[in-house]
Each structure stands twice: as C-alpha cells, then as structure tokens.
Image (cartoon, rainbow, N blue to C red; front, side, top):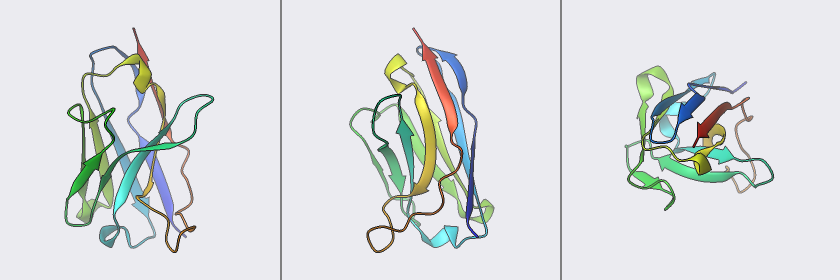
Length: 119
C-alpha cells in the first residue's frame, strides 16, 4: 500500500522561506513524475510544481522563480523549497503523482502540511 507523508510546513512571515518534504512508502516512487499541490480554504486543489523521474521541472506561474522542486529517488523523497513567501501561498500542501494513472488513479492523499504566511 502506498503512503505519502508530507512535512515541513509552519507559520512564517511574508518574505520568509520553508522547505517541504514528502516521503513515499511502499511504492515505485522513483519512476514516477511527482507533484506538489496546494489547497487554500474554499479553493480547489492546484498543482504548483512537478518533477519527472529524470529531474525535469515545471511550475505554476504563481510560484515560478520563488519555489524549487527537487527529488532524491534513493530516499523516496520529493522536496519543495519555497522562498519569498506571500500571504497568498497560505494553504495545505500535498504531494502526489503529477497526473493520475489512466486518468483517475492517484496515490492515496496524505494528510498534507499546513503553510501559513503572515503579512
């Protein structure tokens, strides 16, 4: 059974930084493209960054130049370095596949990690 565990969130002032980690257990993590998602209250979950197994990356326009996604396949871990944080980055952050397998199959969603940016 696949399990994803996110950590590293917290409360930070605008302009600050956080580094999120996502560890995958019991999966074939290393060969899949992975993504970081976020969901703010009252909003839909959105993909903010993704990384292929080979290390190619993509970012949402809202975080480009401020966030950096990386991975360590040997540790089954994906990271999200977040710099120059803004209040609008406040959300619960999750990791998962960058897109569902066969259009609908995700890994089970973890509990996420809360990021709160104060102005």
